[in-house]
Amino acid sequence: MKKLAICFSKNGANIIEKINRACAGKDIAPVISYALSSAEEISDVFIRVSGDIYEWTSENFIEGNALIFIGAAGIAVRALSELPKDKLSDCPVIVIDDAGRFVIPILSGHAGNANKLAEILADLLDAIPVVTTSSDVNDSFSVDTFAVENRLSIMDKKGIKKVSSRALENKKVTLSIKDYPPKVPVDVIVADETDAEHLLLLKPKMYTVGLGMKKDKDPSEVEEFFLETLVQNGLDVSDVYALCTIDIKEDENAIINLRDKYRIPVLSFDAELLNKAPGDFTSSEFVRETTGVDNVCERAAVLGSGCGELILKKTVKNGMTIAIAKRAGFKSI
Image 1 (cartoon, helix red, strand yellow):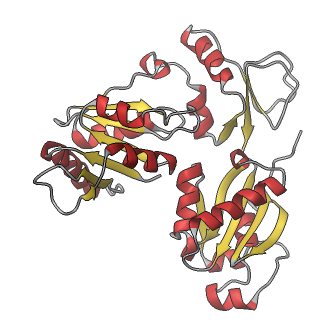
Image 2 (cartoon, one colour):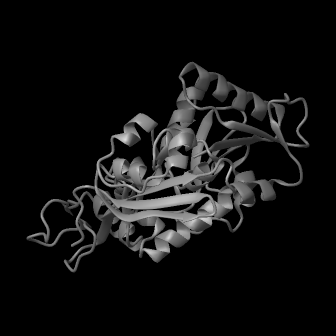
């Protein structure tokens, strides 16, 4: 996701510039630099934010960007206001004091990876990461971090607290992945669905979505097409393992919007690799002449799925194409 940092003073601007100098030295993508329009003596590299901080925060929070406030934590808290809704969908928010001494993740530490981002920023600044989530403070198992790292959907967020409580009490947390149904009751089950006794169900993200589109397609139109296609096929955004496309399309704003807003990674393939995808695909000479391959969405979905089953062939709408594949090795229970 995009990392956006905003400052309110010259000191804050210095912190952002220090972060980006360190990023350049470590081949890390820089943060996008913003400054409130009232801040003085700040270089032109900063995007000036007119109006108030609330509008900037609301717009970028809804888009799913990682927000980094350089200044007092109270500014971030007031700017967020009623925006936070759900620990699994809120965007990561971090506060850094304008002396650059402390980096504090205040929202979405696990699901949004704010804790990890805070550690990276602290390393770049030679600062102290102040992580307050119980599992991290007590060095115990975090089931929501486990789910994010293993690309699993959490089917009941109330179960997170139940599993985390066991871990914090130094009780064994049992997990069933390979053996289904489990021979004995377990705390966490990784499966498509289950009737077995459990505290939390983690569902594998089993589908890849292949996308193709004309250049500079409107992101909102592509998003609407993406969402309606999922609904028509009985799927949810939480079922999507990856967005798949050709390498020349991975930087399209419409793709980036879906990636950032729904936290879905993008897998891109060059034309040579797409041409080697196994299967029967809907061929288009126009697409071949434009991209070097006769079909983008179907071939990309299949490659992204590990050469799994194509469950939705190319669907076309207003210069957009979409296809869905089920990842190899996954079967519904």
